[in-house]
Length: 170
Image 1 (cartoon, helix red, strand yellow):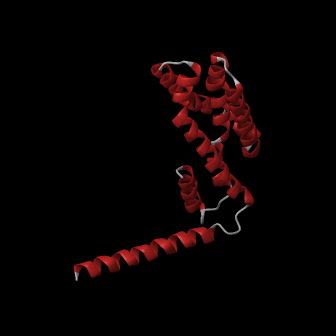
Image 2 (cartoon, rainbow, N blue to C red):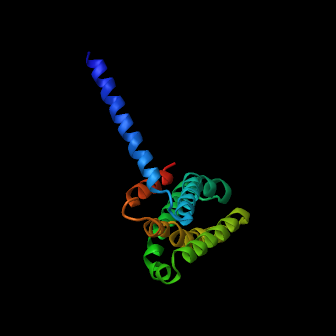
Image 3 (cartoon, rainbow, N blue to C red):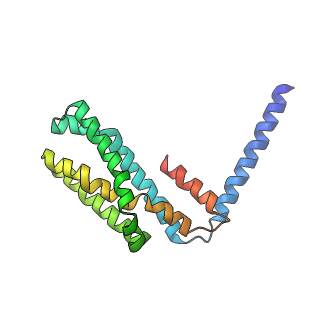
């Protein structure tokens, strides 16, 4: 008897969750294409960031001869610099706008990753990890949050931000 009650409760909650998700998706109908582009860019940017986070210390150790401690310190500095640069480029984002900031940030990131791919120089690698890559990351990824807010309305903003964070963790 108790099992039947638990199963009924589970079914009721599952149907409620399914309805909430379908209502949320329906609320996004008619949203500008920029919202879907922002979600796609968030996925690609996070895939890129997390892939690099997983591999960068091994890459620095095996290919560039850094010790594990040095590679870890470089990785930590890269992550910290994204935040520091983000504080200083806020005015540029405000003046450039969302679309131009995204273009510039992703272009800098692309060029930086290209040079990281072709270089054999420790200094070029460190320059990219300490300057270009965190600058590109700080101009690109955080700006997407502003885009999500801009391309939604109060009726669908909560669901859109929920999707934003789901896409980030895929």
